[in-house]
Amino acid sequence: MGIRLTLLAGTGLACGTNSGRDGIEVPDTPSDGEADLADHGEEEGVADVSPDHGEFVEGSPDDNLHSDAIDAIPPPCGMDPVRITPEGRNVGGGWVVSDGYLSYGTVQYDARWLLNVATGEEEHVCAAAGMSAGETCGRGFVHGGRLVWTESTRPIGETLWETRTYIRDSSLETRRLLWDSAEHEGKRVLPWGFNGTYLLWEKSAPYPPRDPVTEIHLLNVDTLEDRIIASGTYPWSVMTQMDLWGDRFVYLELVDSSRARVMLHQISTGVTTAIGDSPCDHYDPAIWEDRVAWLDSRNEECTGGYWTCENPDVYIRFLGGGGQIVENEGSIQQNVDIFGDWVVWDDERNDVTPNISDAMGPDGRLEVYAHNVATGETRLLSGTIPGTGAGNPQMWDGRALFDVQVDGATPEYAIYMVCLE
Image (cartoon, helix red, strand yellow):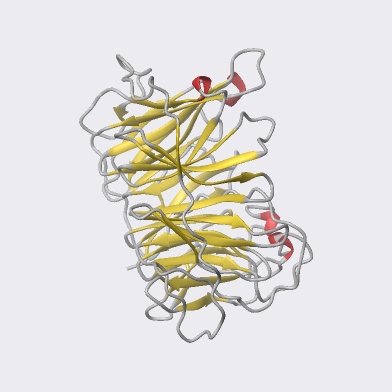
């Protein structure tokens, strides 16, 4: 998956060789000859859950749940990218691909849709007045026919947003409230993944201002048990870039003011282990079954945070042992995702003015690449699309999706899809 939110990276170090990592659950690369990290151990707790959680919202929730595409046509899928979001619908950030569905909204955050990427069937799942009116639709995740999403409101005259997280089963026409920030001292929730039973989320204080305490939670949507997996005081403990697959998820932990490392948590055992550690930053972790991919700046001179490491590399670790550098072409890479043998990322190798901050920028040279770890093939996916840059790739079952700023009288963002196999 490809949601990525970097909160901070600290002052710089020269990034050198990897110092290794440890964990029975995640054996190290046999041939690297490097020392293991001490076992990170288990970090978990049980937080209080409001007795009001889990109530059903009666009636039709503002006509949020209905189909927009009864006679849907499956989107064509081939080697050339095809636009899969409608003309005139300006796609906003925070779109997600999960369990074969694309969840996306508008730049005004006034609506959100679910699109089955295989069949083309689309459903309108949230409607709101929009950011300027103090009412928004947030990101959503699907697994096994269950949908989880967030909605936010800001009362007139107030500066703080209130967030609510809902779940809907495929067989139900009503939604169930999982979390209401108004009942929890304004604590807001930002979902990062959903496996059908557990919702992975970040919990922090109202925004603005930024809360100094950030927590990574797992909420069982059936029992409402809420486990704290990691917590720390911003900015020097937890960086909330996360990805979930099945019984495992990965996230970033800030080791000190200069380094972040990828952590792996197994839900069934409660064990957390470090995937890797290096003198500079790891970021953008992604997981699929027994494979973890991330960006690594160990071979770069970093004068500040990761954005100052000019050419971070794409790495992959096989949890049963082994790993490899997927891409070290010598350009900026970012926004990694993995599914099966394929790894995808943004790449600025063809940008005439490389700068990691100019994604979707005016020169339009941010592109999407894919690499097959079994065959060694590397492929440019977005080269045939007219428009200003392509980025934020996410994958599902041989399909790669990414957003593009489409040229036109009124430029808009759209999502395109490519079939890799």
